Image 1 (cartoon, rainbow, N blue to C red):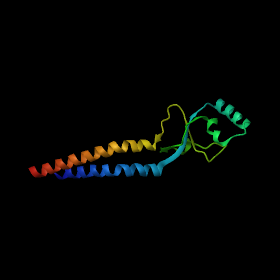
Image 2: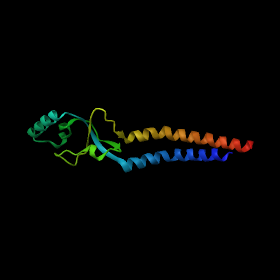
Image 3: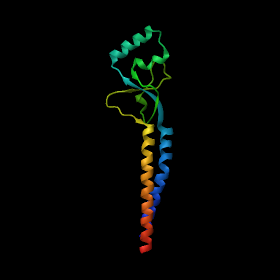
Image 4: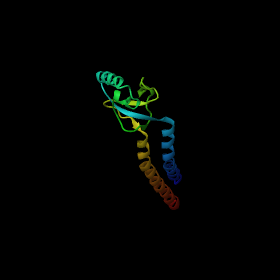
Length: 139
């Protein structure tokens, strides 16, 4: 009866070994770099656009038209295409208009949870393999 323990142990070790490559693959396949902008209401956007046009429209201030921008772009995973906002002033920019209740998944979260998952899977795998070994000796 030691074979199921050994199979489960080997599976857990495989999961532990593949967690980081899986996180990396998800980041590469489904990740996108976006600048987070805490969204403003429509009246504020119209007023900000008017002020931006009066100032001559500096390109670096485009995100501030739509709300309060973050400092640096961040990498997100599984963001629906309709949530990526490309401003008409500069379509090369990719913004995420953060509204109340939004919690997009950052790629750094994948890597953060990959470490404890890998450690837990390896420890579980070793315990199951040792348990399988003990069962094989007792039989």
